[in-house]
Length: 136
Image 1 (cartoon, rainbow, N blue to C red):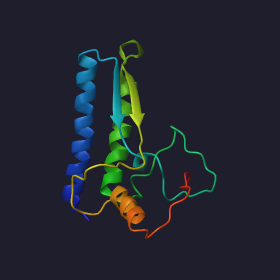
Image 2: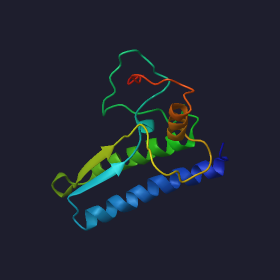
Image 3: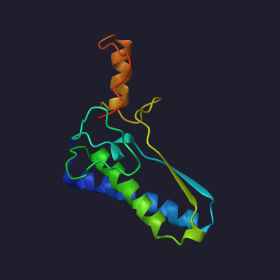
């Protein structure tokens, strides 16, 4: 569990870094920006209503999540959309946000993380995967 200072640095880096890129894209008249976010930004895990459809109008709640990564993704994406909406319509670039559920490939850290745990469970047969639950 990161300290409060580490969490604040993670959030500050995610938000300010994203805004820096978006401002630069606007300044240089880029036509499209693709932001890789996460399902952590849009899935409110406290609302597990069966059959619920998650839309672009929904956000996870940064106040109730205990995960620093999730908070950073929620606040990063909200800041991106707020900035984009503040631009004059005729000067806007296209903003596309991808919210992948899991990332697979080489790990950048040695600590456990969700995507690696899924792969570990599959290769060790510690959990049998069928059809994933795609709603919360």
